[in-house]
Length: 400
View 1 (spheres, one colour):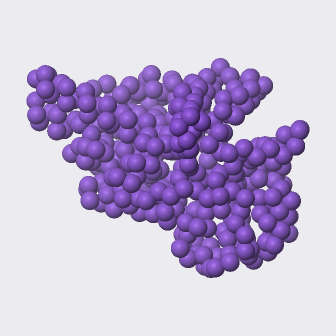
View 2 (view 1 turned 120 degrees about the vertical axis):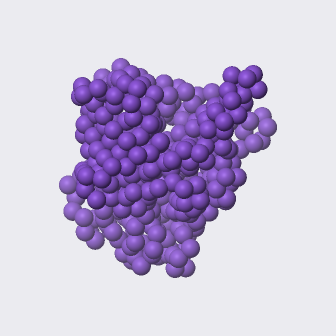
View 3 (view 1 turned 30 degrees about the vertical axis):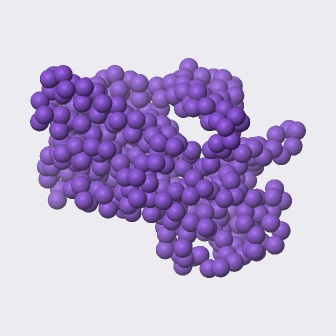
């Protein structure tokens, strides 16, 4: 289909849950929507793979951070049942004073202190000020409100996860997209984006496909080599990191210390998850452990896997009765537009291209849900005041 031309009203570049839900809301507003992604399956960093004879194992450790708006939307609009993560997620810090375990729900307070210090020490504070303001300081009031409810009203905020895992979430979203008429085109990598004042956004793909769209949505994790405005190329800068995932199939009679762990200053792991209880086909007495490892020159063989497992037992992630049955190493790349680059692009591209910059899926979706609701309220007010016709209202309002 080289050289083909497609026209659409809304184009989503990437298929992360955030972009898929944006596509769904745009389609429910009556717009023609197309989703393109370089991967073979939807989900972005949340997609799955087949290992250990199990059909759908998530490729990396994940957590759906506490956000009541997001949880309620999943249950109400997608029919995805959320359940409390057990054992509760933990934040682990291998500090000079010893090994410290903190409930993960308190991790934002740790981040408010640790992240700015990290950027200051690395002389990156100015470049990452927008990220710090939005991702950390911007959540301070929310986190404080949760803690006050917990202390004085006994309303403990539990981190929840979709029953059946995020793969069930993706299945439900895919069903809704099909019902709404959203078109998906996988294995399609975007090579260039070009905008012209007053005209559609022109998107060119590596396979020769060209797409004309009135509006484009993308996340900062999409690697688009060339972006230009009115023929003037913009400087595009990316951070790119290669991560190693290690999946362990272990035999044990005891659960993990936590369903999810964010580890700091741990020489062996960065992220840890045990989502066995959300997987239907794991044999009894076995658990599937998913790890993200820090960069190292260690070989990826059984000896290395056993060394990692020994470390997990020593640091009490796992109980002492655990036995390794199988393992699987994999690598994946994750990066994104640099924060200072995003600000430049947003100023140049205007409203026709929206770049979601947050790295927190749950909070990003919650923010978009709030945005859709606020847009709906404003349009209702304008329609009631006679500023919009009924046809304009139906075309513009996000249908929730």
